Length: 138
Ligand SMILES: [Zn+2]
Figure 1 (spheres, rainbow, N blue to C red):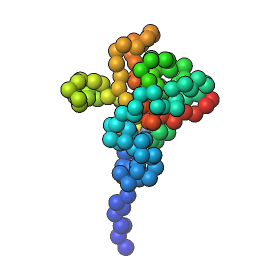
Figure 2: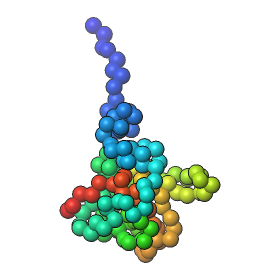
Figure 3: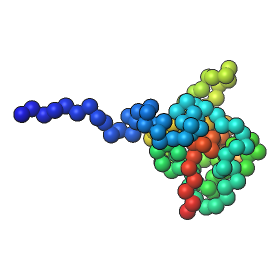
């Protein structure tokens, strides 16, 4: 008897498009998997003040602590620092601008962009789509 080669993989980034569509809401899918941007002022996380953690809505990886969230006035949830190793960035040249795109380091889902006009101590503004985040109260 010879071993049967397996074609399945449990790697996190092997999640199929169909799986993402079934796992995420249409808005979450549009943001996380198609690099969409939600309309400003629409996120339920904007006024979130409770202690807790903002996790990736795609894979559940913790991304930001409430203590790094601040009111940027942009209409998108904003943070001055992510949890260590939680996010990765790439250059985004869409819409004729050069911006720094931010995505989850585990599932690679698109989260938003980071700009260099944030508050101390980092001077960074992680401008996130609330649809890409899932809040977990402490
Ligand atoms: Zn993720």
